[in-house]
Length: 374
Image (tube, rainbow, N blue to C red; front, top):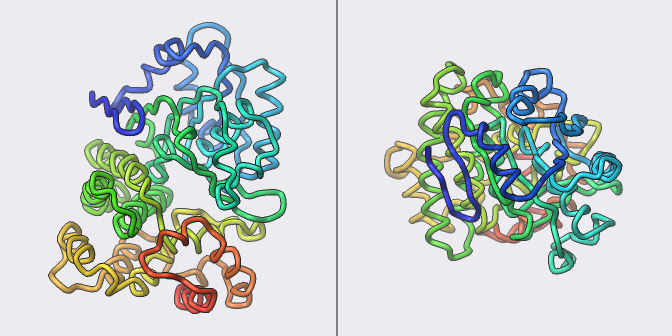
């Protein structure tokens, strides 16, 4: 079993979930709140995790939305308080882990949540965070090792909260938990991981170790995603996809870019309820075209890692991969119309991820990029 000590301690291998009781004891968590969603419960994964624990089953919040909301955070935090919990286990995809992070933040530092918005300098207000363990059941966000979490606020904004204090104290990455993941969700979460690796590499922030991790994650994700989609029981592919996901988040300590700024702007709309990873996948080609020429050496290395010929068009490669694994061809196919662009642009401009795109992006640029992504 691999034990990674980059950013946090990560137990990584088939069967790693059996270490949860030991880690809860080590961290002094006697009554954790498990934060998950109904899909994880329906798939039997919640039962699998609870079965590793002795004694009375812990309280469970399983109403995490696909795009976690401030309202859901407050309901989960109310349960945490009523049940006298002393820690959080985030079990599921990025949404459940992100919601668990928000609960841990409120439990340690108090509300309201909006005061911690890093764009407004809120990260320095973060004090204590309740102990948190993250157990991913998808291979996409890498929230189990990331500094951030994303929440749709009551005022309609989708905010990215970021601080080293938000990194879970322990991550338990067990690819066994992903073997039953449907093909469509495997594709969407897998391209989320690929996007994380690519955007992290392309940011202008200087951090060669993190950049190297991003390249390695892309190598794994790009090669193994088609197999994971078409043969979901392939253990080797599932192992590599979970590692790609974890590495993507380890890499984006460098930041992300305009792909995430745009996907957050669309993902905040409750009338659409669109999957974050799918949004990243369909927006990525437009941003690769937009950023082309800003970092030619990185683009050439990305081509090499993705097995493309020198000078090949990265956008075309991503479009072809999306089609190969059954993802939509653009935002229009996901129900987004050009009429929404004026609403989307200001949110993309204000998004934290926009700050680390390798090429500055204006409001006019974002309007064109949303149209190009249709």
